[in-house]
Length: 108
Image 1 (cartoon, rainbow, N blue to C red):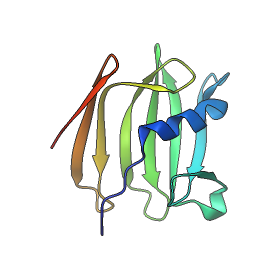
Image 2 (image 1 turned 30 degrees about the horizontal axis):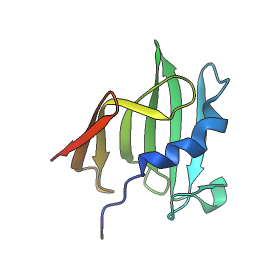
Image 3 (image 1 turned 60 degrees about the vertical axis):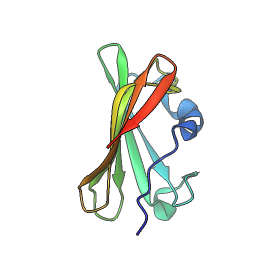
Image 4 (image 1 turned 90 degrees about the horizontal axis):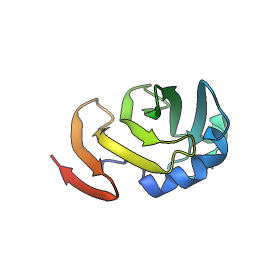
């Protein structure tokens, strides 16, 4: 099975879920990477404020295993910063995306 990870451009959709939240928000995501209801979800992401950044953890709904994890600047969750780890459904890491200002690079 080809590994699936969320396109960080999808984060723009999460703005409405992150704006104005003080603690955390949960967003459900379909296999085609669209925001959906819990009943139709393949993944879910929990976004939590942590000091002055927002920390997102995305899980496979069926297995509840971690799919992706990383930080965003600001409550709008549109700009990833630092390291994002992306995992296969069996829990093994398949890549790491590193964001520095507006640039991104991958390392395996």
